[in-house]
Image (cartoon, rainbow, N blue to C red; front, side, top):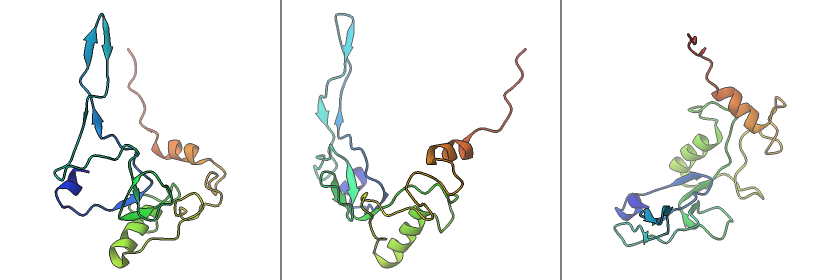
Length: 144
C-alpha cells in the first residue's frame, strides 16, 4: 500500500494478502496490557481501506481490494527460480504480455503438474513435501 501511494506500479502474483491497515499502542491497566485498535495507516494518497487485504485483478474473491496481477496457487513441484514454477512463470508471462493464466474454480490458477491441489505426484502432501525440502540437514552441535 505504501508503494502504491508513491505511484509505484505494484503487481500481485500469487494469492491474496491478509491486510492490516490498523495499528495500536499497548496500554497497561491494572496489571493487564490491552492492544486495542487505535489508528489506521494511510499511504501518501490517504488510502488505507484494505482490512481484507489485496487480491489480483483476476481473482473472483469479492472482498479484497483488487490490484493488477495474477491469482496463482503455490507450486511446490518446482524449485524457486525455475522459469516453469507457477508464480515465476505467471510473473514472466504478465510482464511480457500483460495477461494471466486461466483461473480455476478455487480462484487461483493451478500450479504446474498438480493434479488435485493437495497430493503431490510423489504421493506426499504439499505440507510434507515443503517440510522435506526445507528441513535443516546439518547435524546439531554435540552437547557437552
